[in-house]
Image 1 (cartoon, rainbow, N blue to C red):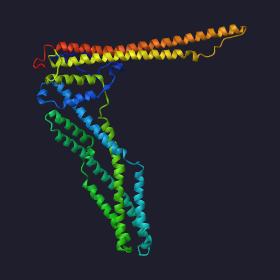
Image 2: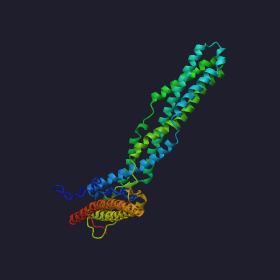
Image 3: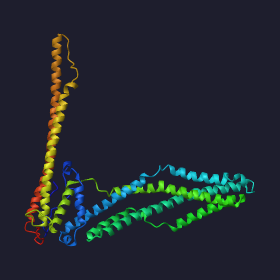
Image 4: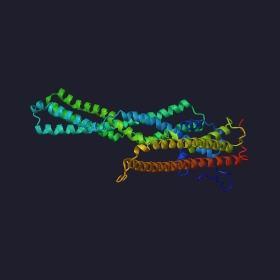
Amino acid sequence: MNISTTVPQGGEPNYPIDPTASSDNSLISIPLDRKPSDRLVDGFSKLAPKVAERLLEGDRVAIQQQSKQFAQATKAQQRYDNLATIADSGWNPQLRLILTLLVGVVTTVMVGTGFGAILGATGRGTLAQLAGTLAVSGLAVGTEVSASHETRKRAMRRNTLAAVDEIETSLDNAQPTTETEGRYYAEQKQLVREVEAVHLAEPSPADTGMLGIAIGIEGLLAFWLTLPAGLGFALVSATFPIVFNLIVAKVGSDRLEVPEACEKLLPIYEAHLAPDLIAPLEAMEIERLQAAIEYVSLTRSPKGVRSVGQAKALVTMQFAKQQMQILTQRGISAGRIRVQRDEEESAKVSERCPRPQVPVGGLTGDEAQQAEQVERDRWLEEEQRKLDKRLKADLEKIKADYGAAIDYWQVLEEQGKQEYRDHEPEDREFPQAA
């Protein structure tokens, strides 16, 4: 097994808790509820500086890493829920094309058909009218798409900045008294800025300017086409397509592009989410760190524990013993379930027995029945023998699997005992807990 006590050259014994150290037996890593461990990690962020200084360097690094993961997982869950709500409110992406076509059709009808009769009588040439109408429609479609993109960029930027501001507000309200607690909010802010960096960029003035120019050209063309019909008609035909385009662009942004942008962020945040369950070795390491904190902060320590190493070693022994008890009960339960299944299968064997095929030539009726019964009994005996063989093999596998898992934790328990003994004369610089 990959569990060992190593002694660095010129140093004190080191007792690594390696979450990857395991045998091929999956029973070793039966997951546990993560919530108790999260409560411990949450407490790490409130460590007083003097307490943190008295921890071993390796423990401080491990605590900082656990706190970082907890902080980012907490914020990732909040952002995931927020973005998922927006993504779920989106329309079918196929409506994007329909909205764009709608803008083109409305603009064409408004400029080309709606005023066609009037324009034909005003001396404006048909070819000029057709070319102008197509140009206005093309510009309308282009400006609607561009306006939708620009609206989406600004909406996503506001959403991301609001998330950052929320973290800063939480930081101000919390008024952290320790560097570790302040780092909790700094890690959350860093996560949001990294994941949503693309949405924090300032809108491009060039893009905004080009959009404004395109809208202006669209309005001027519509105005020019319809001016012979009267100033009033020209003003309406110039402003209506623009207003309509901007309304459609806002709808397309809110219901299509923003939800799509939010949906793209979900897998990234999902990678930072904490699973509901936690590996036993990881849970044990968190409890070991909590024991170290309790010892150096003089809050609580079992009687007889006289060093940080002993406090952590005691957790290892207790945790390993608990896992062995759990595995023992599960092994017994697994065996009972397997025996019960065998009893159910044995009771149904006779129902599966086929009609015996025996030669009956020259046999009386009674002799034929007796021969069939003999063949039936032979088949039932053979089937029962197969069931018994499978049951024996399965029970042996259950015993071997659970036994190997129990042996694994027994090694960890012995490691904890050795760690406890090795730290008996050491760590004298740490005061004893009351």
